Length: 112
Length: 114
Image (cartoon, rainbow over all chains, first blue to last red; front, side, top):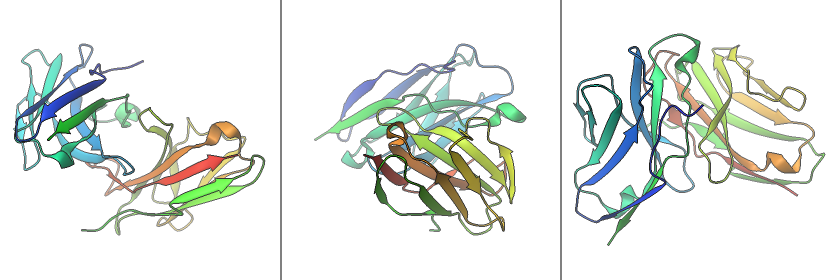
């Protein structure tokens, strides 16, 4: 069963912020939200993760709603190299359910 | 920056043949994962190792797939015999341990079964 729902594809203009939404309405209290991305012909790359507070690192920002049922990954100034499939993943903090389970993701295309 | 090494990058084989993929994780990483990615889909976990022990192989088709990590360092994934439906990207990933937040992925082996 899919734990997350993401749009199939999105476009973004180069230099603008890319906002990628994710719904995870059945998330439980001990589950984190993770984001990975996969550039064509490469393996997935970790971006960021969070539990309930907003998070920021050198790659992106993660905004999680107060009820934790959805989140948004923000790439503040998208470049052509950010064109990739972005995966939103819900992952348990411990136990056998801690596997990283990928869905189909969102194909982000950054346009010049 | 250290990387997960995989070889070969591409493999073409005929159905019913045996095929093997190799993975060398980042030095010091105790946990190693093999994923399979069919075109247009996200990666699917096949097997997870903690050191030399299998932690999870519930999604590994054990009638034809096998995986080993004898010395707890590098790992081999084998398919025998290969079937047309095995055509996919086979990705290896590693992490410091099973509680590590980040998984580091290799570039994968693209398998085509003819």
